View: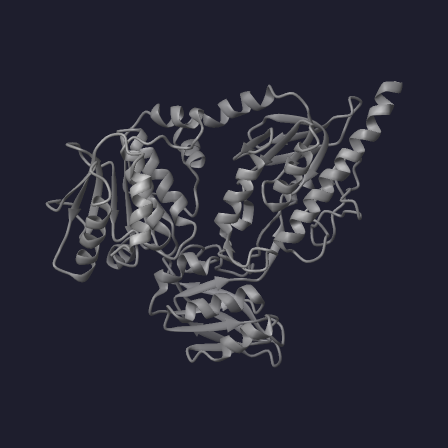
Length: 523
């Protein structure tokens, strides 16, 4: 099943296995079971420390567990972990086999110390770029703590279970049979949810930190660029990030990042994080800023975090990015993750054979409609404007698809459902005012961005759209406070532009610090 090149790579990876492991398969007389057996035979053949047994008795068929020899499985895969999940399989083999994880020693110690019995189940789709992070984090947690068990389930293969549990978005995580979380979660985020004292511990550590020369708020492309440029100047640099990588983590295909013809959001974020860690940058992840305090007599700008901790710095760079814009119509929030979705790559496979709508006629909306057309029964693209705004090449491709309808001058007015899932949407023809109802099972919203700046109201000048007003140097209305990226008035919300703005803001902050130094000496 695996080609020779992949087998060669696996032999190299599996040399890192410390303790023997076994793959325990539960198979049936079906094509997927035969595919799984072929996959497991190929994997087991690449190391004498891996054995394969086919007498498993898991409740799901086909499935297999990864166990230390002679013990019960710590990690289970229900379905074939191919596509984005192939790396999850390899890492599970390595971690169960004793290979050291790359997480921080503090996080590993916290995982091992968790007190309680935790049985996790994660429903994923093979096309979901967010799912591997969750699957790998929970697999690692299971390998570190014997009181944690995890099963990763391919929702497309076990559709009856997906329907019974009313799952309409992935990754969907269940803990001890109850819903735990919907969407991406990192290893640190999971630990923070399970460790009830995590927030208080983090606040104590943060309050003890000395003032930074530059404190960056936000860990997306703009924030990462700011941190790198500041740290290269040899000044004390910190980054506060609610989620390092930001919205780029939810971006599938990136084809306009100059010099890189194609990449995916998670890959780009991993590269950004690795680059930031090349320098002495204090990255404070999973921390949300709640208030900006202008500089007082000590010349330090304060940033109060949601957990109560207060950080201070001589200069601050705001790079909090933006989030997907909601339709703001009745029913949308009621049916969020119950048919209303924002990631076609992640959740599209769950709507196989069903009727869906895509809201938005820009590049994101048209790309989503094209992708979904290959999975679902029918797609209706709804655009508010009188014409689509996507690139011409995308529009041509869209209109060539037989199972796609395009509605322009159409305003979505309400999402309908039966209390458990979406059943229809209402829309108005903006030309004649006529009201229409469209029966469907899914709605994918792709209508732009909203800046994450609500917490800054009353401190820095914001535009009517809530964007931070900046000048040509990235300076805001507050001395010593700069801003960069999608949260600002800088036009064209693009990754490459955000990075350039981040670098510019860091250089401006450094220039501000240089000018402060003579004043301090004179005083």
